Image (cartoon, rainbow, N blue to C red; front, top):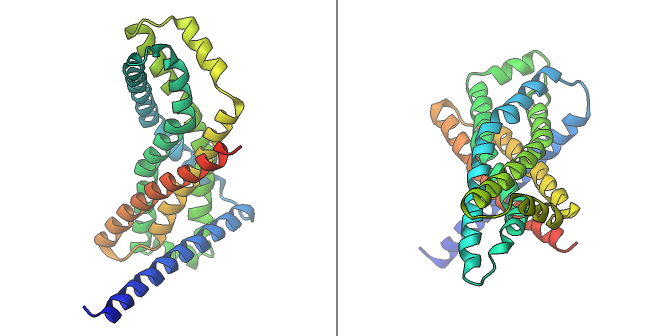
Length: 260
């Protein structure tokens, strides 16, 4: 391949990437604008609320409790090398609330909710149900996208809060039952060490991650190609994009809150 052909290929790749970013940004702006303007569809919103929030609780709870328990064991084993085993409650609390809780919940939502939304909307597009909505004078962005994005924006911070608590309690159970910590002292150290900014950052990350997860599911579903293969590609692409964007957003938000 000649240098000019290589540069041309790199240029096409860069332009295609920028074009995709622009389309996704415009899609997100359109979704937010439709969230703010009537008509509203409360039935769709509450269905999405149940799907995103209530039905995600089991996987979020199991992920958080095992992560908190494993974190307590790892911190105890590492701290024992420096005679610093007593820091287990503080590090478990800050690790779960600031970082692991929001990120793990975000990734679980990306795996469960983003894929579900993308497959559902892509199937509707393939079977021409979205065209039927337009025929009935119902805007697809308002009926399909806005309720799901709003539901994720509202419920994922709640899931993050629940995950943080369950993760801390998982670490507490392991520390008290297996590592010989005093229960009252463990809880006191946990409560005294956490600051309001830690909780605010955790919930803020939850809102951002939930929005990203829902937007990627809706965007890839709307952009799906025809046939079962198109639905499969849309579902796979939505989860990959949501996971990468959640991790990137976590880095940016951590830097923002770290500087406060």
